[in-house]
Length: 530
Image (cartoon, rainbow, N blue to C red; front, side):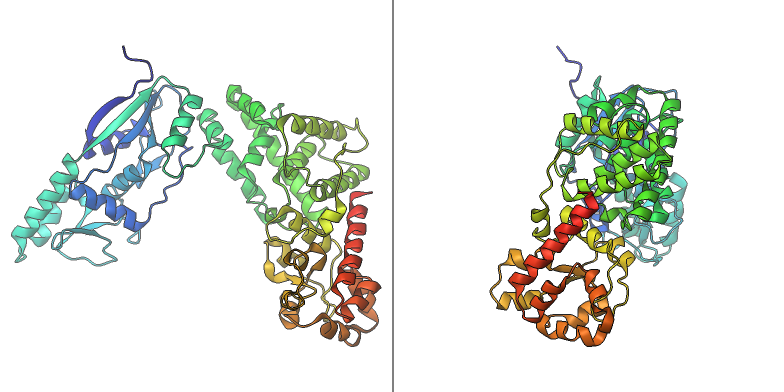
């Protein structure tokens, strides 16, 4: 007896397979990864087919579910079949099928296209012609059409190797047309049942994300989650927040629709009608614009890449959706909340239940039911000050923001440090070890202490290079002459007090690091409102 999900194998010639794509009988679901093959991979596949080597089967999912799908596979436009379901969605074989469709149906517009492939009839190999036109270069997009094939053969009609070229062109045509591929079809399964199958057979091991599944599950002629996410990102590009995580955008679409931001909440979107999804998306976009404006004007965050935790923006977007015009007190409390969650590593690990409770409290604050967001997690300020500095680490990003918030001035000349340059991307050239690493290694200092947050400051690139590995006692002794009566005010912008300054003059790292860590902790507590 055959069970409902029993795979059904079918053997299809390449020409039949490509035709199924062209007519829309086979579609590429939008949860598939992009086309990633390189030119060498493409040529290798075509060579395997020409030599009748096996290239593996493809896996299709035959379903009545109407999912978001790509409008092209390779360079081939896919016909819409709105009334003809069930449809075959391609689960495995995208790179191979895209190669065949792209090469055989290249439109000829761009000579540099990766689909501009010819078969060298002289050497019997697939090549990229690179603009060269030779009689024995047979373009693959001239292969399947009868008149195109005849017209191409006429180009070597009077060539001395005519017989060889005709024979090889005929063999190429028959091989491509008659090569058979096993197409295995599964059916009568929901998208949630299909997801683990896709994950298992996917050659990269890429797991389907919430966004992948919901993109497919919520698609309609009126609503496309992918377009919505891109629209939100585009609206934030002028603030350098176009890289905001698509997962966080999905969370906020869910919250703007009236539910939560956890996976089980997001799953409820599949039951929403398109008009509700569109309304939620519009609210989400407006809330993102307000949240990012707040982040970039009232906090020293110059780009999404320097946000310590992506969930911070998810919470702020939810707040601005509920309260688009917060008063001064609320804005001040939001800033304290930002520093507390960043320094306290609130979103480094979390569970769904706690996240729901925190979001509920945050909404109460937005609705004016609380005078401040609840924050019960203890903050380890000393651990923050002595943490190991590493680019892209959340706590180190937070340190960069803490230092940037002081509007630092370069130690050697007192000019303002270009904060936008330092924080718009994670830029190692704008960070400086006050006690140089090479000097501390010679002194036998432990690596963890060398890279301590308390040994890091922000400098312009030129100053950083000038100081390089110079001993602190040497370049600090020049600061009085260079900065004059501005010395103290410049040092304060780097959270360096008199004790730390004098310790640097003595190359006394132990005293310096103890004193500066105290200033960092003091500033961190001030920012947190503690």
